[in-house]
Length: 211
Image (cartoon, rainbow, N blue to C red; front, side, top):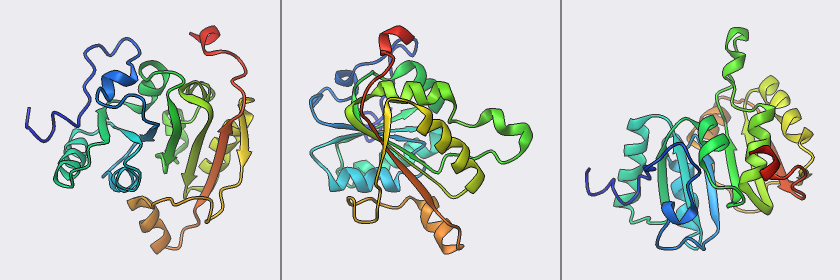
């Protein structure tokens, strides 16, 4: 494996069990951990990691070329608090990642699969929402953005229906938050961007009862 990939790409030895934070970040497993689902070209992920060196960031991306590109950019920029996981997002959230480990989950512009025949491919389902809640520490957040009005409405309804979540304000001055490449593109095209911020207030049904 290339020298600039090995420290930054996390490849689980066993994809059929939940990994630990120490496996992903052995040098600093105690640092607050954030999750970027579908990190794409890594612009948002690396900007956040650069802004918050005291935190760890895990980016999940399915495409090998994108993972290698982000690893290369992180290496050249000497950003060491990032790991990249090349795996399908739904499986990763439902079955692989450690529970009660993440302070934030960033769900930014997931594919809306707008055609009726492709709706089953959409990421946000009741099962996904329950699994995402299980990954958060108490007080942890999930932040969701989309440029697709009907998909945002559908996914937001599912997220709001999870009893463990409480919606909170996400105004422009809430905290520094970088734009993804998709967000910049959609804004340039005049598309409206909608966002939703939810906090894990109570775990409700325990993770153990769903395992």
